[in-house]
Length: 327
Ligand SMILES: Cc1cc2nc3c(=O)[nH]c(=O)nc-3n(C[C@H](O)[C@H](O)[C@H](O)COP(=O)(O)O)c2cc1C
Image (cartoon, rainbow, N blue to C red; front, top):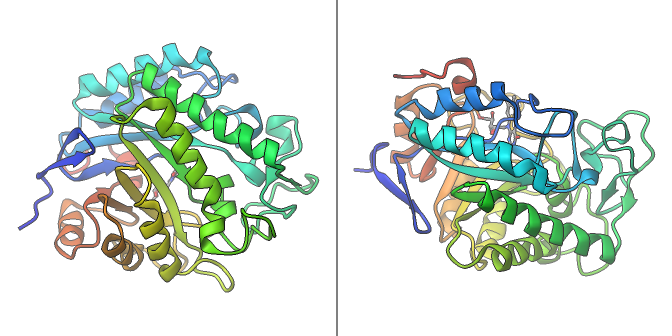
């Protein structure tokens, strides 16, 4: 029987057990997005929890235009590397492996944070958390999309240089790559809009550019906001199809969560509230699948693994509340 303590492999990386601390923004960095001592201490304590095999650190912006919040962690310049190195050292000393999560906010990057007009697949305000009073985002041009692809690749190289064991590309929770994937926010009529295949095109270009930049062996995960749970949005069936398409790329893990509804599912708080979707994704994917959402105990996590809902189980808010969760 599958156990939570099973040794797992994400590409060539060995993980002790199936429990992962998913990315959760602390917004405790400096104004320039650099790691601070409180951030290092916060993650060290969670890494010392023996159940946690892997920590994926909070979403870090890949370029200034993709910054979503003040004090968000930066992966946008080489000045972030020394602080990130202190962070990865602390997490490794605590006994866990660590991935960086890389993100571009798209239309969820407000003017007051970036000082710039946002870019998005289409000139539409985000249906969730609209930045009040901002001008509509600009529809991304091919040149801007190319810059974004290159910025992801450069950020992944920084993560590697800073000692992260792998990187995760954020394509969930209503941020840029999720905006391209979701028909609610992508109304393009070019090769980046329309069919599911087209809506995943930019994400696939990002994966390929990152892979090219970090080399064949570096573990890569994609966090996919698989389903929007909203009329006109992506469905669980779309999530499964997307998993099949993404499995053809050189990634080693798929982390499944919500799309435009973000990381909660209205009306649901039960352990594994995204399990119906992750189970469908797991059947279509050829890489380990992670799911987070509502897990409160080790028994909850064990049940999800036995039910084949996922290979890896994220435990988020419980670890925010208590670094010694279930110790
Ligand atoms: C305070 C907070 C910050 C979060 N920040 C991120 C983030 O930076 N990137 C991300 O992909 N998900 C983020 N999430 C979502 C979590 O990774 C996770 O999916 C969610 O909390 C559900 O899991 P849980 O029920 O175990 O908490 C955040 C969640 C919380 C509560």
